[in-house]
Length: 261
Ligand code: SAH
Image (cartoon, rainbow, N blue to C red):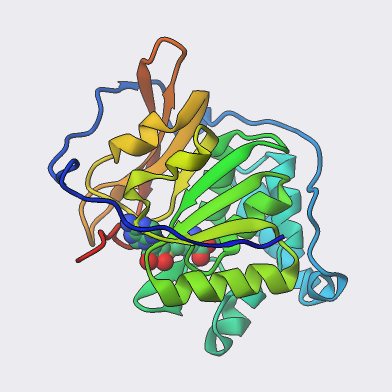
């Protein structure tokens, strides 16, 4: 069942944009990505959508993901199923299975398929886990997480994109709860989460997102300056509250914006 949730952006007084990165211990590089093999996807899209462009999609998964370093079978199977071409505007539909990000309007982009695979794998979640995404955009990443069997909550700051993604996810039968809100504060009512994924780049890690992680859960987030190369981080908080960060490599994302900007 689709729920359309409007959250009221909270006061920004408590969290100035100059807050530093949390103290982290770097525990590895992209080469040390944890891999897992878990149950196959649980939420297939409608048969029609799954049949469309299936050959292009299988080729994308093989050549852009599996032949690189995406080995989590639940991620690969979800991305074999989710019809990426249904999440992009008509004028770029023929580029939907290419190895790149694409414009989705309002100055935003749908991430490169490899980056979706990398972040989904890094989250290290199992079917049934509760996941929060900040930056719904087209809804594609949310659909991939839903197809992996996760309970998905996703927040988008641009109302038109939140509404369009809600409609796309609904039409294809993916169960994800979309909120039109500034995701800086996370989704307190639904916390804690077994994984949090941020698909726009802030210049620092929002502390509320760290606070809303379940023990041993991961926050996967690009952090860095606008318009330059950012670093993809995987932060985890252990049971004693210690934050560790794993550097997953350089990336370029659209900026994480704040309500009122
Ligand atoms: N995950 C998306 C790609 C997102 S692009 C997909 O699969 O298509 C990044 C998105 O983050 C944009 O739509 C942008 O509007 C949104 N965004 C930026 N700052 C945000 C914030 N503070 N809260 C919620 N969404 C934000």
